[in-house]
Length: 474
Image (cartoon, rainbow, N blue to C red; front, top):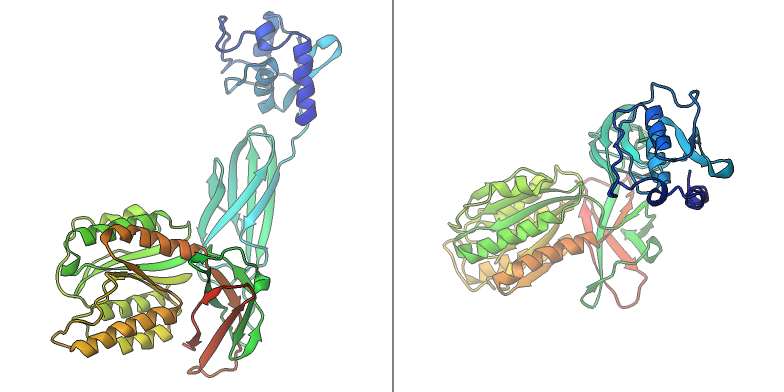
């Protein structure tokens, strides 16, 4: 009983003098009423009759097998009776002369919708399934099924779960079933499609991550119609258009060399904790602390506690092998799904790497990872020499790192003091969440060694656009 019907019953009960303050003591009133738990429903109704409430019911509807399992909620008679009768498919109704009749309850509608994933979408790996349930009945649980097998049960909103589907290219059938506390049931189904492969040639969807800025502010309210994408001068249709909800596969690459001892390293770990606390349900992060060698490296995880557990008590020490560790991070991300990101915290002063920055640039051009550099003290500015390189060579290495960051579509975030580090981590995450993700299918007839230019035009006044300008076939 909903809406006007419920209001009418409550009004009729009030007119009949049957609200609890007049005819039945409230739970907190001076008179005690039993909780009725464990009673036969018929005995509970007879108890209310004995307290002066005019309830009429038949043994055909209320039989001895009906037991009260939960104490009734509410202060009004209507609320109490609904709580008592509802689990048994019954409800109160006002009859002649204000009598309260026990009748069969009409089933309450229960609408279930699957919000994510989208119908027809190809899904792989870890996928979040999100549902919405609309009903006036209390929800007992919501079951999530994939291809006929239950993968999760959720007892309270929000109704969502994450399931690992693996990498098999197959159709998927999703079903969400909501079960009401009083016997109601609702369900919704959704089918996703495998990626079609013709003539044994699979065309991978390319994704371009685009940051749009006006002045110092990120522009977040543009739609698909504002973007035009070209590859090698030819316009390409946008197959997908998303914003920052694309899952992250990120490596936080933290310089822990001797120059980071004390407050700088503590600030780096605080920033890391802040970044991890804002991860989405499908994001995965690996944390690497390095000097001239890896000092600590976690596994990829979505759990901040797991990622932070192995980082406490570490001391900064040794020189800096930035190039080697950046190259290794890009290699690791090649095997990950999602939007690949390297977040580097360092002054950029490489001293001990075996690789030169031109080696790293070669890898950057063959990776689709975004590189963000939180640059401490605006970098080493090339004003140092080492056993490996003189001043000019070190300056060239620094400029190569800047080029790698710009080329990747990321950016440099300068911080003058350790107190700005945590804010810088937050700024990077905020930018990632506000990016536009343009998906398109490239042509299939190109040679594997070809370079492809990518250009994105944005139809919006006064904006600057940042993205990766192209790619090599891998």
